[in-house]
Image (cartoon, rainbow over all chains, first blue to last red; front, side, top):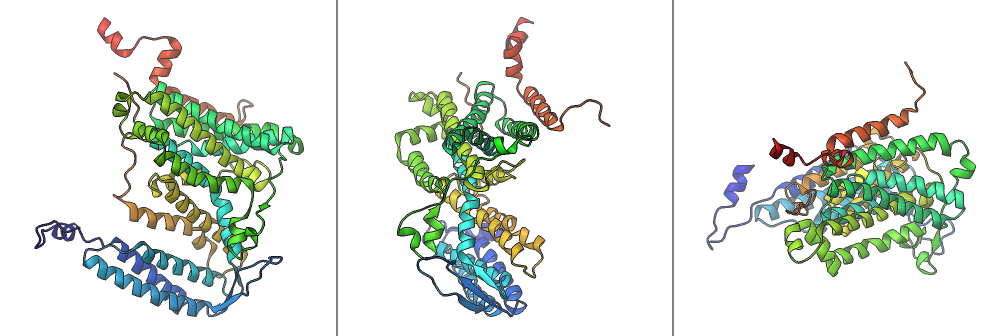
Length: 427
Length: 44
C-alpha cells in the first residue's frame, strides 16, 4: 500500500506533485455493496416488507410502501456496486468520491437492512427516526460539552460522570420539589460541579486530565449507586418519581408527514438540543469569545501574549461545558425515562467522547455521528421487537461496526486542538 | 467473606480517591504544606 502511495506522489508532467491515490473509500463502499448484494439480495428474505410513513392519528396519512425485501436488497446491491466501481475509477484518477456518493451507498445499505429485518411485517420509519433523535440527545449534549472542553484545551473524559450526575440530581431534585424546571437547573449545577473538580485538578494541580476524568467517572458512579441504594430506593415515590416533560407539538409543522413527528413533536429537552448545535457552532467559530477559547486550546502561549488569562478561560469554559453535559443528564431522566436507574448513562458519555473525535471537534459533525449511534441503538430495539430471523447478537453489533468503519475513514485525517490535554504553566 | 458492613459502592469511591491522590503530587503538597520538589533539592 505504501509503495502505491509513494508512487502516487511522483511528479506529474506539469511539475506539480499529484495527490496520492486513496483506496479507502472505494474498498469500504465495495465491501458494503457485496454484503447488500449477497446477504440481503441473493440469500435475503423473500417476503414483503411494508415501509410505513405515518402512525395512527396523523393529520396526513401516507400509504405504506410495500416492496419485496430480497428485490430491495438486489436492486440496492446493484446500485451500490455501480457507485463502488465509479469510486474506484475516481480513486484511480486521483480524485476523491463525492460525499453524496458515500451517503447514497449508506442510505441504500440502511434501507435494505431495514427491509431484511422487517421482512414479513412492517418497518415503521417514523418510529425509527423519532427514537434515533430521542436516544441520541444525551450523547449530543455530552459531545458538545466535550468539544467545548477540548477546544479550550481540557480533555473531558468525565462526560459519563457528568451525564450520570445530571440524571441523578435532576430526578432527585425534581421529585423533591415537584418542579421539573428545578430538576433541570439542579442537573446543570451538578454537571458544572463535576467540571469544576476536573478543572481544578487539571489546571491548578496539573494532574493528567485523562486520569482525573476516569477517576471522576468512578467517583460519580460510586456516589450515585450508593445514594440510589440508600436513599432513592427507600422511598422512590417521593425521591425518584420526577415525571417527564410533556411533548410539545409545534402547530402546523408537526402535521407534516414523516418530518413533523420526528422534528416538531418532541420534548423541551430535544428542542434545546436542536438549538444547542447551531448555537455552539456559532459561539465557537463566529464570536470573539469562541476565538479566544480556540486560541487557548491551540496555542496557549500566543493567547497569553495577547492578554488572555488562559487558565481562567479554561476553568470557566470547562465549567460552562459541564452545565451542558448536566443538561444532557436531565434529558436521560426528565426527557425520557421518568426515574433514575443505577448507572443509567450506560456508556453514553464514552460514546459522546468518540463522537467528539468522529465529528472532528465540530458540533454539526459530532451531532451527525451521535445521530448515527442513536439510530443504530433504536434499530437494535426495533429489531428485537420485530422478531427478525437475524440473530439479535449480530444486530447488537451494528453500532460498533458503524463506528469502526467511521473511525477507519478518519484515521490520520482528524486533527484535534494542538494544546488539548496539555496543562499551561506560566513560567 | 464480608468483614465489615461497608456498602460495596463506597469502595469504588475510595479507590478513585486513592488514584487521584497518587496522580496529584501538587495536591498532596498543597494539603500538607510541603515545599516544592525543586526547593528541596536546592536545600541539599
